[in-house]
Length: 305
Image (cartoon, rainbow, N blue to C red; front, side, top):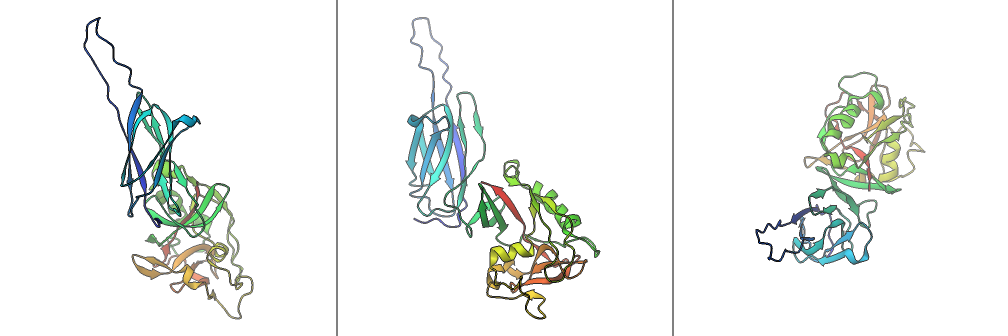
């Protein structure tokens, strides 16, 4: 069964018993406890029947690989020797993601979230943190993702001044308060990258300094590259102030169920403006005043796989 757009999280519960016996010198001592029962709960919006769950010993011992096929949301592994195991989940045509890393020890439970991907490709939707994200690109074990929908309404900058992405209040917010809203394990997977901030391709407006960002907005060039390039960016139609082409539909996004325009980090036609994607999906190189509070945010980030 094909699973699409699934929110899946693996919860690991280790059930262990400590045995204490009062006995005389002639009593037989119990065998030491060296195994445990592991219960894995699969939480999903769709059926998980047929999903294969594997516990694989991280030390590479071929005798310590245990496989179960889920009939429902609970999968039990009985008499698992103490050790360190990775949880892997596979399914035909399965393209969402899951969490899971299990440490089974005689004295304590160690639980660390790791992200695994199966057949992940551009266009897929994953859930990370509190949001759904669209995969735009995959390279060198990392993925560029952009929020599937608009997450909030916020101005590019708090006041109407000449400003670039490097000094904007929106960049400060995304790399500060918004970034810190993710859990520590999620933050560890967000990669800081160097963003090149080009001048506006049609109007020549200064793009400002390159920036080191954990979370950012897409640029004009990036939105054209990943949502569809009709050639208009390189060959501006006479008198055009926006790219209006057959890829408009790909760029449309909603905010609370309503279609809205969203910010890009590139400058607009003048120093007090920033570019954006309109409600009909066209790329406005003319842009919007940076203090426009009707602007909405569709963040992007590079995620370590």
